[in-house]
Image (tube, rainbow, N blue to C red; front, side, top):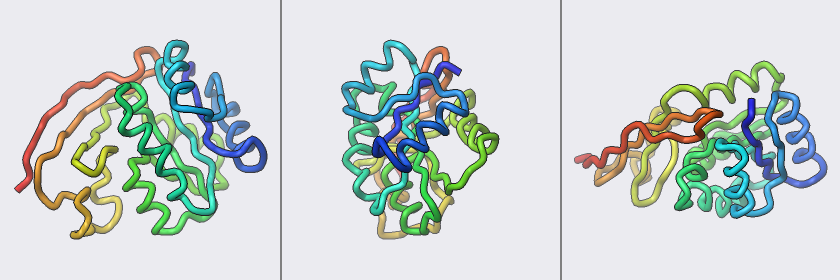
Length: 183
């Protein structure tokens, strides 16, 4: 595959291990996250980027990076898959990742074949994203229990439902973009 992996994490330890794993499953090139501008520049060479985030002590420290990606004016960045890799992720960690718009949370250790299957779920088939005043990310309704106090979880109002298709050849294609109102 000619899909770039942008690894978010230290140059040693879990960040280095994640870069090796990305190479082993076929990402090319595999780069360390520096800036969003550098990631956007990579789009001229590879139309699809995956952001692979190494586990951190507090996943909330990734929020500025996740928001910069999810609210980027560049569509090919905005819809880029974000995957968080964690050792024994807690329910709160998974919920936080979902609320930040991550596409997947993968518990380590993880075999290469299973990782490749999880990555392949992100490309070649339509994906649904939702945008509200406080959330932009994949459709994750039903992944965790409904939080009635969380406005990102369908408590009414206007929202966009966006259907996309990711491919290695063209990157991100928007198939449908509908504005809707939930009562």
